[in-house]
Length: 143
Image (cartoon, rainbow, N blue to C red):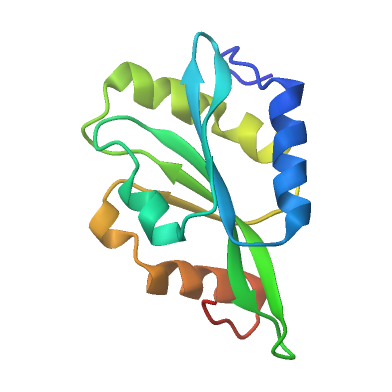
């Protein structure tokens, strides 16, 4: 349980595990609703489109199986956790999401890279690729 008391339903973890083992570019957008983490959207849209669909004034958690090429040039994915925290969010929302972040990262296994961002224009594909490459120590390339 998080420091906020906000819970993650087991069926949400099951949905995440299904997505994770499919090994294709896709993501889940999660939000806090009625005292628990809920699935707002599961999508196979490209990462940059998913980012653009995030609200400008509310935080979200995004789990995205990001496409890469591994060291030998084979297609692969790495699970990215994006903590979307726009400055326009209310203080109450910011506190709830920040207090629940650790619970998210510990409940959803296989997250290889974490990014926190508050500005969509700063969340470029190049920034994400560099962060994944630095974390994984591998060559990368968006598919």
